[in-house]
Image (cartoon, rainbow, N blue to C red; front, side, top):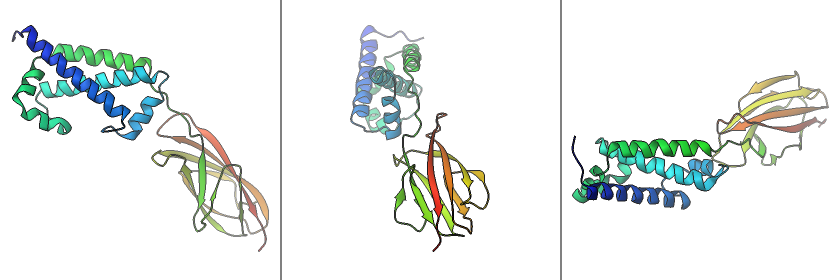
Length: 217
C-alpha cells in the first residue's frame, strides 16, 4: 500500500473542499443540478443542513469516482491538469468513503419530505378557459368531455384518480390517469367530479372537486 505524505493528503482534502464549495454555490445559484433536486432540498425541515450534507455527498462521490478512474463529464476538462490529478490521488479512498457515509447519515436526519399538490387546474379540450377547483363546468346534453388536470408547477408530475357521481353522467364510476374522457347524460342535471392527486411520486395526496352542470341548449 502506498504511503502518502501529509502534504499530499492535505492537498487532496483541499480539492474536496473546493468541490464541496462548488456544489454549495451551484445549488444556491440553481446551476448544474436539476431544479427538481433544488426544490426537493428546499422542502427539508432544515434546508441548510440538507444543503451541506448534499454537497458533501456529491463532492466525495465525485472524487471517489475519479480515484477509481471513472470519468465525470462535467469536470473532465479539469482532469487534463497533472496537478489536479496529483491532488485527487492524495486523498485516500477510505476518507472519501467515510465522508460519503457521514453525508448520507446527515442527509437522512433532515430528509426532505414530499408534499401533496396545493392546487390544480382543469382544462377541457376545445375550450379556451380553464376551471379551478370548486368551480362549475356547464355543458350540453350528450356532450363528450376530455378533462385534463394540470399542476400549478409546470415541471411537477401528477398522478391522478377520478371519481364522478350525479345525474349529469350516464354512469357513476372512477378512472385513473390525469386525463378523463366522459360522455354526459342526455338530460339536464348536476354532477360532481372528484380528483385525488399526488405529485412527483409522493404518497401524500390532495382532493379537488369540479361541479358539472348540464343545461338544455
